[in-house]
Image (tube, rainbow, N blue to C red; front, side, top):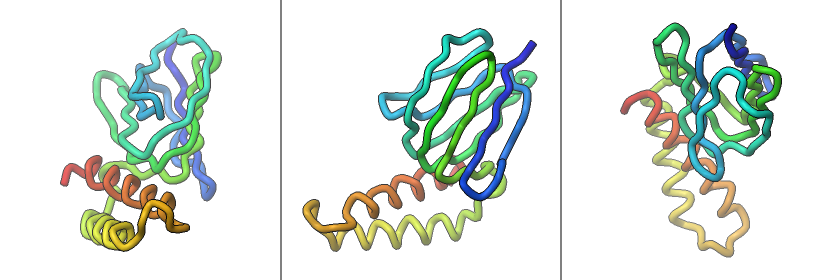
Length: 132
């Protein structure tokens, strides 16, 4: 018996697979889920979501969202999700630099500061997962 992992974004179902373990970036810190885990739900930070299948790790960059665990099923409702091998590193680097520059021009009181901060975190997560 294995866990079922579903990753869904507003645009599409990204992944549905049987896994041994899921590790995710929760808002209160990273955590792992294995077979027969207690049910719970949590918000996700932008970062690396890893699943283990047959001893092999697979990595996704998630841009935040929510994760629910129940009945040996992990459902990730992500703002964005990309497999490590699908990330365009040049585009991710440019997005990170652009978001950083926009953020530097804002003060914490400026409208849009939190949105730009989130863009920086999502872009940084994509670069980290891509290994660059």
